[in-house]
Image 1 (spheres, rainbow, N blue to C red):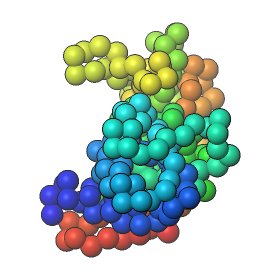
Image 2: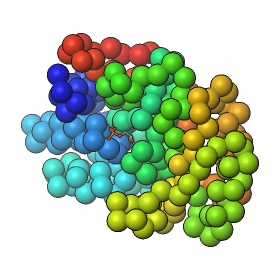
Image 3: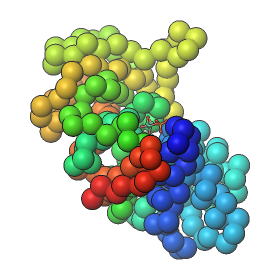
Image 4: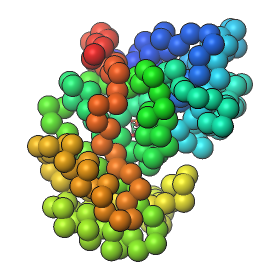
Length: 225
Ligand code: 5RP
């Protein structure tokens, strides 16, 4: 199976958890894209859901497919969220934010009862950290914030667009990509990063995922509980 088919397989499995009447969080990225596409088809067939997106890009996509959207002001909880990840361990600890949407993704995840992550098998690792940790920082003084992140032991730099400009998130912040190497204690690192003034949130998603749906190259699906 090619990469796109694997993303589709994982997304297909994830949307089987979605039932009429639910409020659903929509993730961001090339895997979550397929979940949104399939939900769009189900909505056309009569699935009655309302959704909240983790990025402007996913919000635009969902609206273009006719998926009803809601706002935090109008809901108290999100029943299910389906999102991708950059890395996951077998115990469902994650790195997210490769698509620069980690802040909204974490806010949506924190408000979600059942948080589903969809990945292909290449994203499953023994230890997090090969993928650099995305960290959302406020623009003011970001050079100083980066130095503080470096003082924690990382090689870190601000993320640029393909055109070479500083990437600006949906929240008008910047992303710093921090390479700490393989991480021994994710809880401590998570806490240390978020204690730096100027950091808004980081891409370590610890004890958040309810299940991880893994699509394997041989076509099988594994669900990590
Ligand atoms: C965006 C994310 C994505 O979920 C993550 O980067 C995975 O993306 P893809 O499914 O395209 O590999 O965290 O901020």
